[in-house]
Length: 55
Image (cartoon, rainbow, N blue to C red; front, side, top):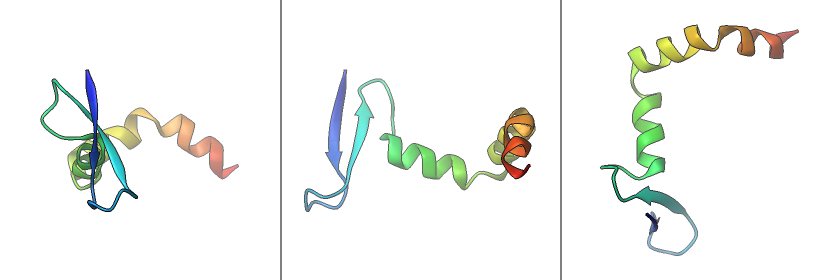
């Protein structure tokens, strides 16, 4: 099950929050983007996809 969280309490920014997860999806992605180890692994695992955009 999922719910929607009103992030700014003004009805303009919402995030999905899955019942079995601690963080909503917006907080989860920003946590990942602030984790250097996670980013390094992401770029290593997706290197071939990423270089195809620079051609």
